[in-house]
Length: 107
Image: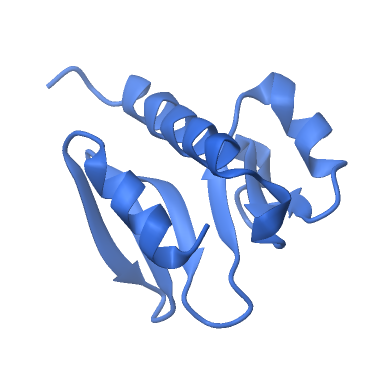
């Protein structure tokens, strides 16, 4: 997927906001909490949260590594975006959104 496709999908989810953090990362947030981070500097990398049970399996796959600084929270970084199909991208981005949203206060 391209940055534009990732952005369009993330923005299609309810109450998602976006912002630039650290001068080079496009962040998608729900309730002020990040669920997807896209590095705007080449090469394209995308980070998102996954289920604990999927973390080890995904990070053993080529082109997917533990996300720097947040791997302990089960975030992965996709360093080769073509490794995931469009369907897989949508699944993992929606799942990340749901995982983050579920931990928000009920307000």
